[in-house]
Image 1 (cartoon, rainbow, N blue to C red):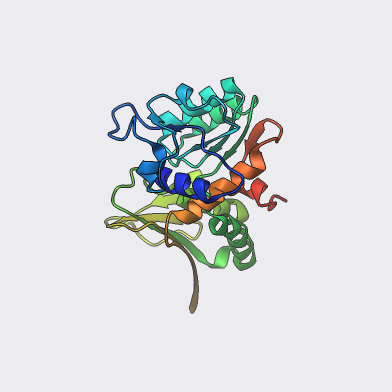
Image 2: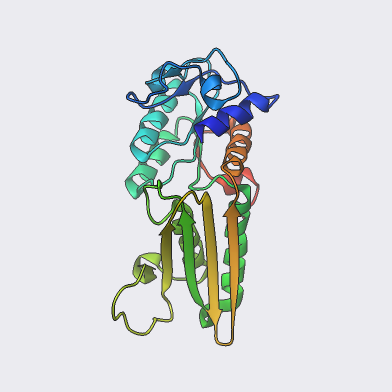
Length: 256
C-alpha cells in the first residue's frame, strides 16, 4: 500500500510527498521513497520514526498495523496534522483512543478505503431491511495469505451494518465459522467466514438466503489502487475539517 500510495501521489497534481516512514528494522529504511515505489527519486528518504516524517505535512496517510497506527495518530494529533487511517484490525480500545485523539485533529478512519465498498454499506442496509427476518445472512471474505487479522475489518463492518439494519445485536448473533454438530441454523444468526489464499487482494460476498431463492452481492478488489484512490479522496476531504473522527461515509456524503 505504501508503494502504491507514493506512486499515485507522484502522479497527482495536488499532492506532494514530504515524508515516508517504515518500521525500524525494515530493509528499505534510508532509501529514497520514490525509488522504492518504482516512480523515480523524490528526494524523500524513508525514515524509521513518525516524528521525522511529519514536519511540513498537512495530512498523514496510515496503512500499517494497529499499534503503529495508534502511535502515528498520537504523534499527528500533537503536531496538528490531519490523519487518514486505513489500517485494519483496530480494537474497541483503539477506536476509543482514536476518538480521544481526534478531538485535536480531523481523522478519517475506515477499515476499507474503497469507494465501492463504502457505497455498498448503504446498499446492504437497504437490502437487509427490505428482506427482513425471512432471509438468512452470511458474509464471506477472502484475502491473501499474508493478511494478519481475521475476519477482515470490512467483513466485520458489513456484519455490523447488517445487524443494525435488522435490529440485532451482533455480539449476540454473530458467528465466526462453523465446525462440528452445530445444530440447525438460528434465524437471527449472522455468520462471517474468512478465506486466506494466495495473493487475493480482497473479496467480500454477502449472501441473503431465502426459501426458494438467494441474493448474493459481491465486491472484488482487482488491485490495491482502489484503496489508495479512496485514501487520497479522504485526504483531500479531511484537510481543513473540524477536529473529529470521521469515516468514508462522511467523505462520500452518504451519512444520513
